[in-house]
Length: 220
Image (cartoon, rainbow, N blue to C red; front, side):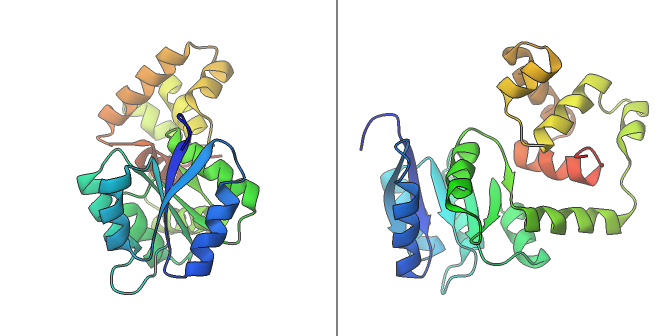
């Protein structure tokens, strides 16, 4: 493997899909697939051996499913990013993935170029959600009906106006460099602001922040 490539491990119980996804990802010269696994447990075990940067995880697999794999990887190898790639966009499956620490959730119907872009985004620390997944998340938040909106968050002193601007751009998928350009800030300032926002909201990563943004109507 060439130095500097994004190392990816693919977990799917169907062999032809594992191999097909490998072929798709390795079209990109910045990505190298270092291992394949047929369930969540094997994915976790191979993480310790191959030390991938990103694991692409199916959710429904025999014996040890994606939820098991995500939880085990995040507990023992927290530096590894986990991007769910599945056919299921029901609320229960999405909840299992996100509650166990998934860094992104996309569907297998996604175009090849977008799958590659999703791997790169998750590797860079940007949470990625497919359109169908995003709609499920948003619908659930809207049905809850009790989430405070942007104005109340600022009024209550939870976040400043500038921090709300940053959260909104994070939710829209922009990276730190792009946020800095849009808000006329230094990239280091944006990085520090995001760290401060996560600390204020008692969150650990951008995935939780993206869910928070949807819940509070900051994604529009």
